[in-house]
Picture 1 (tube, each protein chain N blue to C red):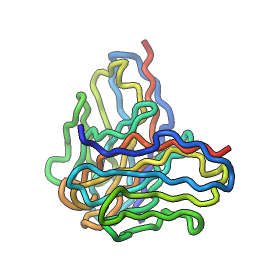
Picture 2 (spheres, rainbow over the protein chains, first blue to last red; picture 1 turned 30 degrees about the horizontal axis):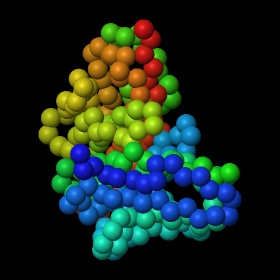
Picture 3 (cartoon, rainbow over the protein chains, first blue to last red; picture 1 turned 120 degrees about the horizontal axis):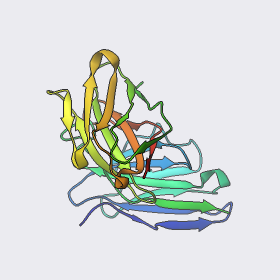
Picture 4 (cartoon, rainbow over the protein chains, first blue to last red; picture 1 turned 180 degrees about the vertical axis):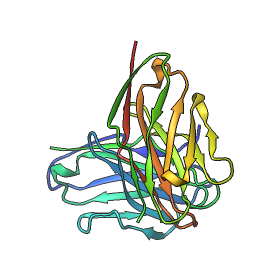
Length: 117
Length: 114
């Protein structure tokens, strides 16, 4: 099942370090979404990217967070100088077309769980 | 801006009983509507979706949902739950147009009483 692949599944960082989370979308999908899930909370939209373009980053914190989806390779969510409040599960989803077009279905990875000590 | 409200944080039902999970949305036009399920430690799986047409939509695992425009609701139902249905359920709304995002509700945790 060549689904959405996220790695690492679990990541532990100390405060001030950098975290890099990777997401390989389903084959043929060029739309990638990142969501953050805090304990006991729902999914909060962070960013929507197409190949080489950021379409909507309205959910991204203004500082320390960045995302990219290069022409080749996986999408990367980068968190610089992590703090304890960044501890969460980060989910990536992909779609064949944008979520408002086509079937609209998002296919989710199993998430990357970041723990900041 | 679009938003989704799931008023029930946690629901417990007996195995074999019927289930209804509530979802209300706020959006200026007719949105795309979705229900996803998340098992512990896992990603989300699509249960069903509404785009247009018949307002009663059937999904996987015996679930169905009904879009009621007048109530801005998209409640999820199942006539008889099974212990394996215990999970977190998320309602989501998407705007029409290709460059759009999907917004999720805060989720409802479903527990099944033996």
